[in-house]
Image 1 (cartoon, rainbow, N blue to C red):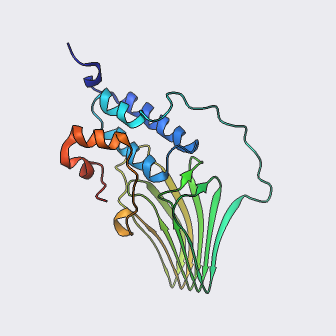
Image 2 (image 1 turned 90 degrees about the vertical axis):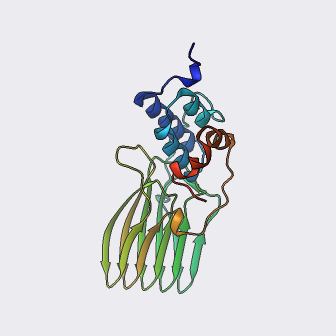
Image 3 (image 1 turned 30 degrees about the horizontal axis):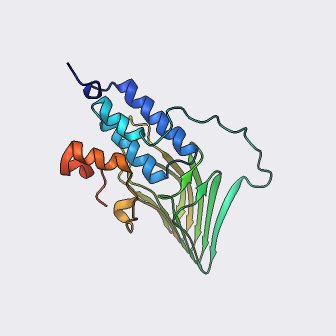
Length: 218
């Protein structure tokens, strides 16, 4: 008799797990890096047991969403560097649109350990003779638009294959004699990830190639 956990997973079941992960992220249970890792793992899972590992430390049903509150005068959170540096790293919360302005200075926003409480991370990045650097987990979908005049705007991120419902970071970039760059894990200083139990179980199931199959070498 087939072990229930070894039953092959369907596309619909994978998508259901991805949606549960997304809801857990909005509730503050997962960082952006954790959400990205687990989402990619869900799409590569082949059995019910593998899918169960990805959500075993999460509630089976998402908590009711609190009523939306209007933020008068707080539509965007700004990070500004004028002839100096502004950096935001580590654990922090993203629950609104972000703005980054570098004028003859540098602004660094590291989103990897952030708790993302929105469905979409939207950033307005302005660089005037300065640099704005946005660091994201490899595997997110980066949408970059805008304008560069005697400057540069670029994405250097290992994005997920088409068709995956992965986290989205949208950047509107305007660079004048400056740079706006979106970099992935593989192009930035590694962070120390606090791997949860599912990761160890996944490694045992898939062997030493599990990190490479998930696109993570850190």
